[in-house]
Length: 329
Image (cartoon, one colour):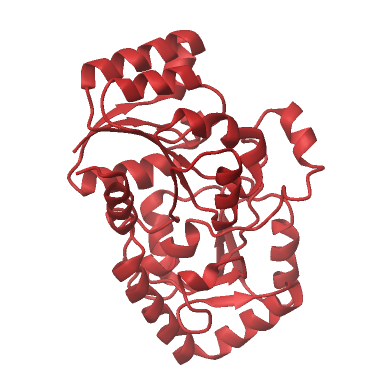
């Protein structure tokens, strides 16, 4: 299938930060599945040509490509709804993956979803919100593991406890609490002294860690303008936890995952059998201690999680279901 792929190539649109999540996961998976992608990096185009010209260039790219489907991953308001509708008229349905509906639906999704033929949400609880705005083409999907970019590559265990992700919010305090309890915790990512790992080394670290922490608070400073952050800090749902990509990437790389319990997690992985779960800071300390002391149980859970993710929770599975729902080849 020929897909016009409209997404950022760089993390948060900043080349200095390396490849974006979308580039590493969505684009890699779609190409790995054999689809022909026509990429359009709207952030790079905007930096070079400005917003208005970028929108015009996107319309021209759609007309030239005449795709079977256009797949978007919007960031903010860089792409006008009228442009999205124009892309749809150029060939095939226009689809967007809405990543933050659990807290950004009211101020973002409700204004952009109507421009798309189909919208993908990872938040089951937001489905009624789509109904409320009279939109009946929302598809519930979920994050997953890109089997073309993640696998069990570690040959041995090297670390006791690791966390890979940005340092913000309560995360530094959580890590310091564990260290104060005597645990050896290694952290990588923006904001940590060790910096960010390259992708292949990150995947290897997942499998080389006895415990991989997932701290799934969803609010990410730096992603939105300062004026917006000031408003978001006062929102009750700004820090609502959610299922994240790490939920599947770590088990899909052979690692044992210890994550905070979030809504609907059990729909995808079984706590205690395929992943570990903690309920509070005190419980996190207890869970880390227990899983470090029970090596055989931890290895069994990591193996079960790996099998479940590879069998049911890859982006091949997600995109196949999505394309079938919208009637795409």
